[in-house]
Image (cartoon, rainbow, N blue to C red; front, side):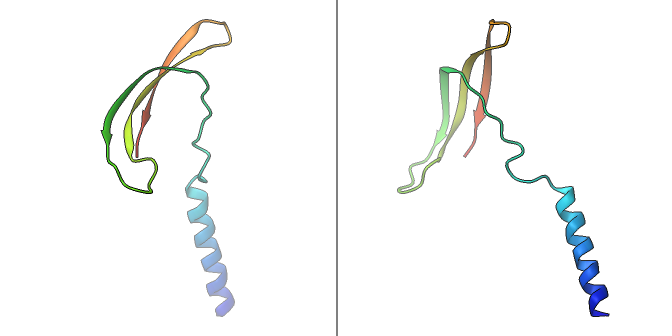
Length: 76
C-alpha cells in the first residue's frame, strides 16, 4: 500500500511539473541601443534594487541591415 502511494505521488508531481514550463525558458536576449525611456513609477526602498517600472525603446538592426525599433516594458 505504501509503494502505491509513493508511485501515485510521483505520477502527480511529474504531471504537475510537466504542465508548467521551467523558469528561464521565457527569457530572451535582446541587443540594441536605448533611444528613449519612460519612467512610469518608482519607489525608493533602501537596500532593494529594481523598484522602478516603465518602458525602454531599443533600436536594433535585423539581418537585412535595416534599423528596427522595439518597445520593452519593464516591471518591478
